[in-house]
Image (cartoon, rainbow, N blue to C red; front, side, top):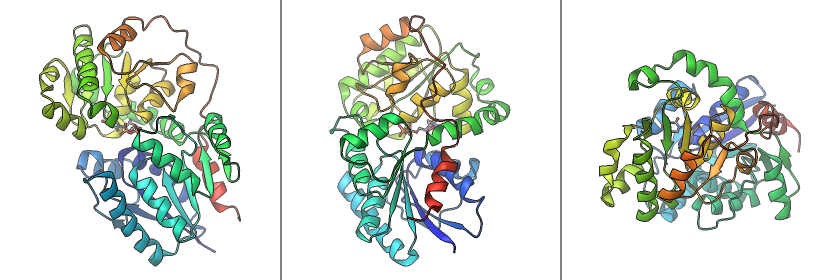
Length: 362
Ligand code: UDP
């Protein structure tokens, strides 16, 4: 009997994770069938289509084209669209990823139709309920039948909330992704030459979390610190559309003149830059971990992180968004003791283990 999985994606990090699982699903023709739904949350070609092309992700059967609007409008419209699809497709599983509005809409639509939900990246917590991502995670986990955790920390977080059934530590899909694309990126990307960069002599930065972009003080703290670091080494900033808009709105674009600002990058270029960087400064969850996988020191522009292992092992400094703290972390890059002996994100078989769970009889 063929099992049908409806996969819900909508944002850049979800396309990347779905690439790994879809590749694994394709190894089981006749047993598993995947129907891809793109909610439309990220719609710029360089935030969406380029990932489908480069990572060979199955073409979505449905695109709901829900983008922009408030959280309520966006999530509501997605919920309505996904429900219709699930009624038509009658899948055995709905597969959701991470912590975006697309994740929550998929979880809610499926749970109300009594379709089991499998959540990849279950159990992550920042313990900051002002983050929209934290709300999405907690609610999605609560209605999921299969909680596919990337770390033991995530398993423990769920246990604290009383969630024990259906919880599995499968390791981090992003580690599978890193292992798969690491060499491919080095072989195929020409981004270092294009940007005129020398290996280990530049910094790579990303910034897009609402807590930073929507707060003029935090955004200025970050962007001014990057401009200062740029006096010592080139700072490459693939600029997220939201950050670009808010920098303009707050009158902070002048700081960009000191940086190497580029459009959001295709994945293989990003991975090539990450591996070659001297340091990575970011508020992204995925990028913090990629820094860890590629053994590049990371400065995280947030007050808390879900990826506590990267901090505990000395690879990541959690500094917030003040100019002084970011600059201090950059100046003290040489000091932390960094451990490479521990593998908190599994052994690169998360996708396979997730598939085993999806094929198990429940
Ligand atoms: N990424 C990319 N191009 C960029 C910036 C990021 O391909 O210009 C990749 C990055 O390597 C990581 C993922 O996007 O795999 C992280 O996505 P994002 O930072 O948007 O989301 P988060 O991980 O914070 O949820």
